Image (cartoon, rainbow, N blue to C red; front, top):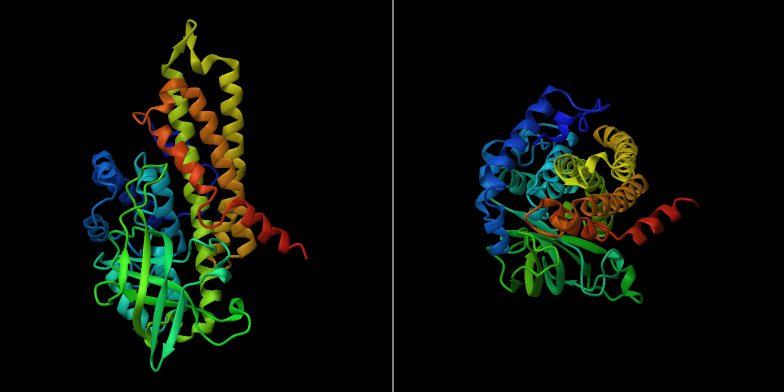
Length: 395
């Protein structure tokens, strides 16, 4: 089966990537083809993929590729981070990994805001796959509204004692450590005005941390999103990301901005793969004495899909170019996430329809891609939240 690259979709009019990026993409694509696609069905049954997958990815330099070499990374740039996201999207099995191997969003957060000690403590071990580090933001009563979180961090001398409950911790069942967003339990008239800190909690050392098995999802993937419970978890003040709890909200929003732009790139890649798979299927499938691809309705539907993907690609690639230059704007990232997540939903719906009844079977990857497209309209902030952010920028 031809890949999007071979069909001229990926790379058409794209001038972002140099030879080092292409080599990195080739390594990532081979890794998905050889290490993930043959095993994904079993991992779906297990409801998790093995943590050893991180170490195997690290062995060929896929983890933290954009992190400087002094902190154990490959010394690449933001686009290496984006490519790993895109290859999740271009892989037939990539959707089922959910968050997958892209914990480098957290790595960028540490690089951007962490103290020197925190960078040297965490980043080299993340780059080797020794440590899987995730972030916990959402709660049962607060999702995209970070300022509504109820998890608290009470100061006791040089320590903080953390209590609360988090939802949707990516790779929760296999992660070693979690960065937890918690509100400082200060005497404040309005609790929403109390500072929010980001705290490193090492599950292997801290007591009082309980992580649930993966929550059963409509998507039935292998990545596993878990709940996490914190009962009087004690951490030293040095565990605050950046050393300043008052900067926690700002650091959280920067992490989310990077995540939204990276997700937009990943979703566009999935759209391109869906188009490729659907064209191939319609070329081979016959009805009423002709190929499904030869019906005018089929060509009109696919023409619309290709046009919308191309328009989205031009927009997102421009934002990736700016992001690689260090100019990631939160409103732009919200526009990219909004547009592409809504586009992905339309693309997957049209493509699954052209597969007919076969599209409803998990024997065809379009089924899994369709269900994850629905998730992406909620992930890292719903479409409604993105519209709210964009609307605020209007003045």
